[in-house]
Image (cartoon, rainbow, N blue to C red; front, side, top):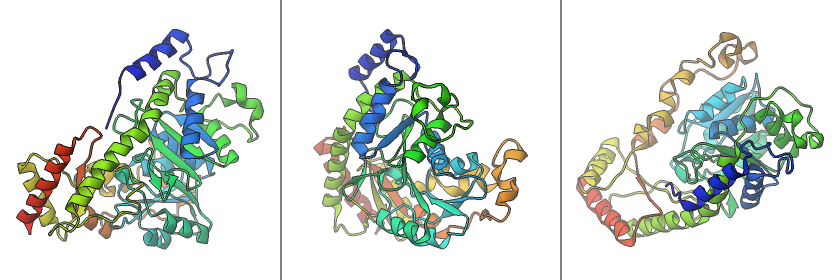
Amino acid sequence: MLEIGQQEIDAVARVIKSGHLFRYGDPKTGHFNECNKFEKELAAMVGCEYALSVTSGTAALICALVGLGVGPGDEVILPGYTFMASALAPLAIGAIPVIAEIDESLTLDPKDAEAKITPRTKVIMPVHMCGLPANLDAIMRVARRHKVKIVEDACQADGGSYKGKRLGSIGDVGAFSFNFYKNITCGEGGAIVTDDNVVFERALIHHDGGALFRPHAKDIGVPFFAGWNFRLNEILGAVLRVQLKRIDGLLKRTRAAKHRIVEGLSGSPGLTFITHNDLEGDCGTTVGFLFDSQSRMRRFLQALGKQNVGAWSPIDSGRHVYTNWEPVMEKRGSYHPAIDAYRRTENRDANHNYRADMCPRTLDILSRTAFINTSPQQKAADIRGVITACKKAADAVR
């Protein structure tokens, strides 16, 4: 749903003309620059005290887990339907991803997440897939009962909400992605948000191996440790500042398109929508249908294709289905065995008995689901055409 234009070009030109492309490169302003301003603007929009921009959604997830003190010996519960990065993030810091079922909302099943909690569980990571909010009320209750933390993976749901609160602001930490395929983009980037100062400072140190040399070093209370380099640059920060101003307008249009499609198809014979945990708050970028069999779903897709309406099934999305996460399923957690989370003695008894059939409900739901994407560029006539096509396709497969 990329929208980019002259405003972004002007923002990039402003940074290049300034001569300060490195986010800590202006000695006059220190860290009060494009990236810093973007972080303040993102924090204000989401409703959190702190925000930190990083180089990708994966980096955001890693920094979020570091902020919560996750490491070897710990388990992180996440759904079997998400991009593999959700599982790679705990592995990057020596922890074990535990894969749980989704429910008919296509997001983490709170009951199965609770069933998979062990004394090693440090974090539950609900993922707001395809702009669809997870059942955060139920997941937060589980987390409180078991005294575990929540990292909201909102990488596919920039700007979304749940019951009036922005996604990312409800758990202990939220993570976003700004790559080319997300609601807003700078090509590649990410961010975390949190209200916890200690979590923020740990993430800040981890994202910048040179943190102790920065102007803000004197204000950091967490002892410095050896970090990595996930720093964003000023060009990307400037682009994101423009993009952030677009997000609510974009989502207003995608939500309007989705609501018109849902309204137009409600009660249609042969069509059942996936469960919505918050129809008003979801990003509106996808409309999901759940069929009683995979064969009906396939025939529905074929019928839509004949009418030139694009549709797809999440079971075909490859990298987003846990069975296709080869490095995870085959337990190759790093290039070197000495730093491979699966081979660490601390994780010897952790829950990593992966099997292709370990989440049968997830595979069943995905194989019976069809998605239609919406777009902020869709016109009323386009939406009417989608509604008509879906009704014809549903009649064809009944």
